[in-house]
Length: 212
Ligand SMILES: O=C(CO)[C@H](O)[C@H](O)COP(=O)(O)O
Image (cartoon, rainbow, N blue to C red; front, side, top):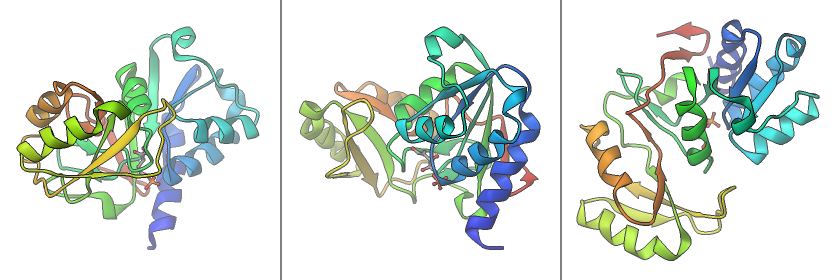
């Protein structure tokens, strides 16, 4: 099966987790399939909390109300894609530069359903360059701190996040202890968020329509 088909199946399969209330919605091409399927059951839900301007636009196009997280309160369900997923459901995210809001909505949700195609499954995280959102004036400082830890930082030149910040992609890390690395990167001054989801991994992973 091709990659786009697996993404579509995963997006559609996640609908079975949707109950009434407000749904947390991630970002990316796989999530776009989820939003398309969500449109068919929009009477079931009160609305969505979105993790990006991109997803907000798509939700609104279908007439799905987009709510502020502060107003919505804790969410029962968050659905999002990933760039890599290990056997413990720990993830690398942020290929679409939406990692900070994605982390916030995931943290505020009781259940995180991650929707991916099979190319995203790995034994050890790190082949996909690890995205880090940084305050612009801290870019060089953060890059030096990353290099000191053995990573190769590459500025994603031209990308501005929805929060007005920049992205550094870290190449060359074989992430054997994702929890420790996430905590360590979070301590670097100027880092807004790191795209490692180890402290808050996914609860359910759908690879196409197959749950693992
Ligand atoms: O983390 C993300 C955006 O910041 C996406 O979930 C991740 O990049 C996967 O995208 P896609 O579903 O297009 O493969």
